[in-house]
Amino acid sequence: MTRTVTRKISDRVMTLIFCSSGLFLTAVLILIGAFLWCEGSPALSLDFLTDAPKDGMTAGGIYTPLMGTIQLLFVAMFFTLPIGIITGLYFAEYSKDNFLTKVLRVSVRSLAGVPSVIFGLFGLSMFVIFMHFGSCLLSAGLTLACLSLPLIVTVSEQAFLAVPQDYRDASYALGATKCQTIFKVVLPSAASTIITGTILAIGRVAGETAPIMFTGAAYYAPEVARSLFSQVMALPYHIYVLATSSTDLEATRPIQYGAILVLIFLVLGTSAIGVIARLKLAAREGK
Amino acid sequence: MKLNKIGHLKGSFESNGDNVMQHTVFAVSLTGILLMVFLLLFLFANGLPVLKDMSIKRIIFGVDWYPMEEPPALGMLPLIVATLAVTLMSSIIALPVAIALAVFTSEVAPKKTREFFKVLLELLGFVPSIVLGFIGMMLLAPYMQDVFGVASGLNLLTSSIILGFLIIPTVASLSEEALSSVSHELREASFALGATRWETIRKVVVPFALPGISAAVLLGVMRALGETMVVLMVSGGAAIVPHSLTDPVRPLTSTIAAEMGETPVGSVHYHALFFAGLILLIMTLAINLISYWIERRRVN
Image (tube, rainbow over all chains, first blue to last red; front, side, top):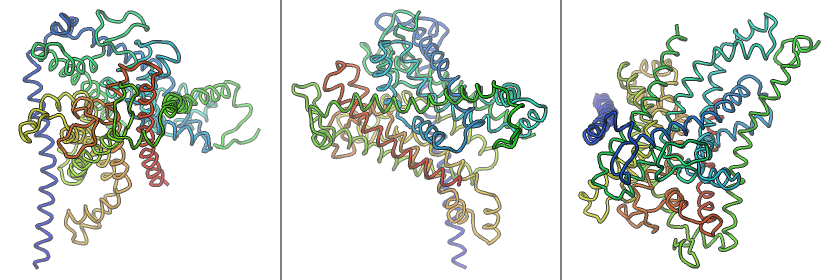
């Protein structure tokens, strides 16, 4: 009898511990969220988003770094999307189980685990110095493209694999070639999943700071970059600069918290769209 | 006409376009290999020249890191120890919490709560490290300074706590996936034998999900090893071998990030920072390949 009682007690105790881990996480999040909101929300306004930093970055808004981040994301996705999707297509539709495929798989997997600061070193030595691009939007964008390649590859491979084999068989039965099947059947059915995955990848890359620190992010730039070869301000790096080397910490305090809030909204907003879209897709396919 | 591998007719049905397409796709896919090769090549080419100025033994076991002096002292032991210490401490803090969260989400929570926590954990994984570094600097560091009565709240312990928070969502949501992919019949069989929930979790579900959980743990450790912004902002930045939890430290990643901008290209210091990158890259690659191997073994 006592054995049963101790078993029941230990079950209750462990359940309590597991539940408290959930409560703990929620409590910490609410605390941090409330703190950031209290400090940062007074700074938020439309002007904050549309004004460039002024007076040695102690006043004004975050227009330049915000636009810089968006430009960086565009450059990165421009290079990484075609290559990533085609690699995913290769894994899902063409790859045979040979040595080269294995090497490619291990490479993509290794790239996924390379620390972001190492991508920064690579971008510096390859794009900035070896290819003579200099520290600019293009170099930083390319560095971010390298970083996001494994994300896009994984996402698109899974999207292609999720297309039912029946679709392909039906297309072949109608006499379509493999090429036609891929363009007219597989790609359209996988498109929405790939788009969702891309949104998630953007969410992950948008907040990266280390890779762009020495490849193109500027301490301060007077205006939004007009060419691929000018330096850009980026929101995450701007926050780092404000937090660690500002000339007037008191004056920049609201700007810092405001910028942090905007970055959180930007990243979590993007990711939330991706996550919700994915749940919707899954629900639709489940029917 | 003959049948090819997948079983459909080869020859008249397959046009030349198919071959062109196949070769193009293959050629483009090689970018992945090329990128990895170039990454290794550039890191080695820029990192190895430092060995001309200093022996590898003096770099790895030297305790003096004064790269700006003439001649520079490039002992990386404090940086390596700092990286390992921060990774170890943050794992000790984060892994039990992360796995408890995974079990809570997958096994204990009711359906609605489970859905909510799944999304929450995934979204938390997206929070940029600069945000956590900022919170550590502005919120946790002053608090730690008061509590421990130390000179600065920017130290080993504070950065380990923040790093721990960074890896909790990753480890938790991957472990949760591993746990919930364990078949329901196994759980029901265990309940039918009279086991309590905790006994079922401990003796049935967790052992079955163990490969997935260990892959998740390795991934978390790898993230902690390579994380830059958090340690750059919160670890204090003193290149000393830490003797206590409240000593400031300077891990490899933050050294690279802090010093790369100010060092002239091609100098000994520049090559030394690439060498630090190499050490870091080798550590993370090793962990990554181990977790890849575990995953492949599970699939087969």
